[in-house]
Structures are given as structure tokens and as C-alpha cells.
Amino acid sequence: MADLPTHTIVFEILTRLPTKDVGRSKSVCKQWYALLSTQDFVRIHCSRSVVSSNQRVLLIDDLTCSVRPIISNNNDYGPSSIVTFPFHHQNNDVSILSHLNGLLCVCLNHTYELLLWNPTTTAFKRLSTPDSHGFYINNLDAIGLYVDADDDYKVLHIKRRSGVLGVYVYSREVDSWRNIPFITRQEYLSPHFNWSAGTFCGGTLYFTVCECWIGGTNVVICFDVNSEQFKEISFPPVPSNGMVQGVLVNVKNVLHMFASTGMFEMTIDLWTLQGDYWIKVLSCPPIPPISLSLWCDITHYVTNGNWFVMTKLGKLFTIDMDMKPFECFYPVSWFRGFKGAVFVQTIVSPSI
Image (cartoon, rainbow, N blue to C red; front, side, top):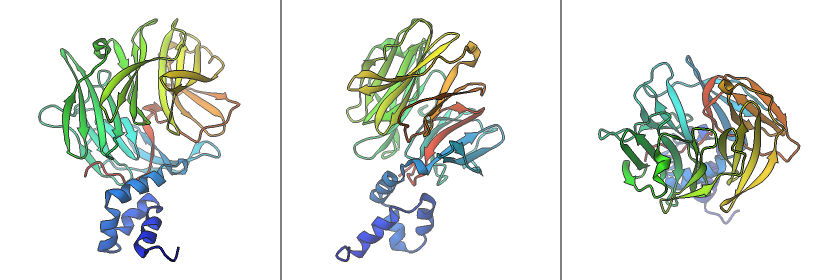
């Protein structure tokens, strides 16, 4: 250790600071400000911040936006801190579409604008442009946030409009949108198919694409973020005699899917992707009969082996699982009556 240069030792120490302490450390001196602003520092600090103890839950209701720590040993949330949106909004009409490394891709529902926002540093970047890029329509569009091999954060926007279908990529590095070809079956861009938000895992964005009726087609669309090529892989072999829903989650850089199927009684299985094929990990007991109006969304898998499944109106089912738990919480769009997401506190900036 005595042979290491002083600046190397300082760098190693600073990359282990809590996120909010990095901001305070920038005011120590000009040298530290320059060091803490470099992309290398941000990248290494981010890689050391992506741990379960640094996860936070962001909750949005009609009156407040709050952030809570996750207490993993009793599967609960800690005391809340009120967050003030740094951008104009109307009655908290903010929808969270995707997240990665502390950045949230959000939509302002009254203007349809897309933004990148870091709720820890409060920095944000509007992605909308005068030529109509960066505007999101719920139930028609799909969003995926990812980072490529050059460490450039990007947003994939799949737009489905009346008579207009397109796929666009926003680059943080060049601060602009560009069109890319969608090379797979064009019918998946039809409004008859429901697209999930993109889940980034191992250099690929994954989307579930499900036809909006019983017995319809269900597939997974993969987008290689470096080659910018699309391909289709099969859905897990679940029964198709009811409503089918797949929820993707990245668990330690391995893609998993909670696949639910049924009508008045739901069955939910957990699958993992190996190559282009799905392997079943576990099945849960059938959930008690639920009205279709209370169709379940999976919120998160907690660390003591309990699997929480929550209806859209807030009714909670807890399923005990006798298996090695994941140290991971799954980010969702709606839960406990709030809009929200699970994110990691980092200093990643929404703009260069």
C-alpha cells in the first residue's frame, strides 16, 4: 500500500463514499471536483453502489413523492423522506417507465414528455424535441433504458401511432434521437399486442409481447444494445387457456420471468433464461380466486423467501417459498396504491 501513488489511494477511497457524500466532497478543492466529475469515477462509483443495501423505494401518490430505504431483515420500508420534483408537473402526474443505475426514465402524463431523472442528485434531462421525438403514449409505446459497451446511456422508444410505427434510440452522449429498423414480425407493432417495459440484462433489452386475448400469441423480443438488432425468442411454455402475463426481472445479471396464467384462479411460475430457452425454477401454489378486475401484478421478491403478489387495488397475497432467496427487489410501476419504483442511489447524471 505504501508504494501506491497518493491520488490512486484517494481515488479508491472516494469511489466507496455514499452517494450523497460524493456531492459534498466536490466542494473540498478544485482537484477533487475535477476527479469526482470524470466518467471513470462515475462508472466505478456506480459499480460499487449497485448493492441491495443501497436500494431505495420511490413512492408517488396524488399529494407526495417520497423515498424510503428497504430494511431487508424484516422486509419492510424505513422512514420516508419527501422528494420535491425538480421539474414542472401537475398533481404528481409522473409515471416511471424504466430505471437503470440510479436513473429513472419518466413520463409527464399531462404533456407526454419523456425525462431522465436521478432522484438522488435531483438532476434531470428532458428528452422531448420540437420534431416530436421523446413523447410517450401509455398503452401504445414501450420504453427501455440501457447502457452500451461505450458506457453511453440510451433510451429505446418503440412508438405505435395511428398509421405511424417507429423505433428510436436516444443517446445521452450526443443528446439526440435517431431512427433504427425494426427487423422482426411487423404485426408485433400492432395495438393488439401489449408490450412490457424493457428489462436490461447482459447487453440485451428484453420485452414481453403478449396478444390481448385468451389463447393469443406471446413472445419475448430481444434487442442487442451493441449491434442494435432485434430477434424473437419463445415465451415459457405456460398454459394458454387463460390470461397470460410475463414479468421480467434481472437477478444478478441473469434474466428471470414470473409467468402467470389463469382466469379465476392464477398459477405463477418462475423461469430463468439459459441461452434462448427457458428453464422452470419453481411453481407457486394456485392463488385463491381473484376477480379479473383485480388482476395481479408481481411487486417484488423479498429476501426471507416470501413472494409478494399484489392486486392492482392493493390486496396482498404472500406465498412462502422454501428456496434460497434472491438479494434483489423487483421494480414495478404500481404497488400499494402508489406509483413507484425500486432504484439504487448513484451519481450517474442524466446528461453529459
